[in-house]
Image (cartoon, helix red, strand yellow):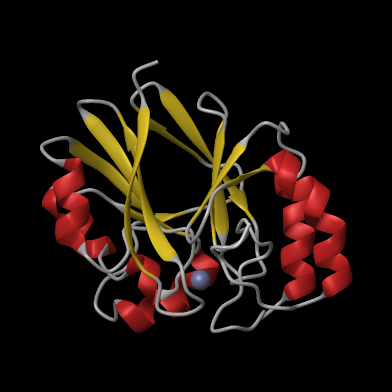
Length: 211
Ligand SMILES: [Zn+2]
């Protein structure tokens, strides 16, 4: 296995902690998940490797502001779930995402596959990307180490988000690493243990750096 995972972090606008752009690939090609606000720092980390696609886990601007600029260098497509198209337009009024992601869709990069899981709640078009070969799931804001990810300290659909976590994420192998779009990483096993307490606590906003 030559495929590796790198990340570029930037200060999160709301809720503290850092946002993460994830770069998955080998020495020749990469996929970028949630490039964040600064195309130059992401392209720096990519170097001369080819960007095959830029995947947006959801349409919030602080995660996707640089999506078009990062994709443009290698004429790569941007991927977004169509239910976040309205959010996308706030950041990119003149550009559309070329790939409409759907549950079960697959991206291939280097020698691994990223499977799209639709996990609505944080936004209607939130997705996670599961890589079985690397034992990781990229969760955007759908699931943070602290629980369901809020937006602007609120939960647009807390019940839906918990449902998506329970049905789509907690069914993954328990040793799967959870690499979120913000704050610390966790595992499916840890999330499983905390799930009932998140359910009981309801929509409270926690510090994303706290485990
Ligand atoms: Zn968000």
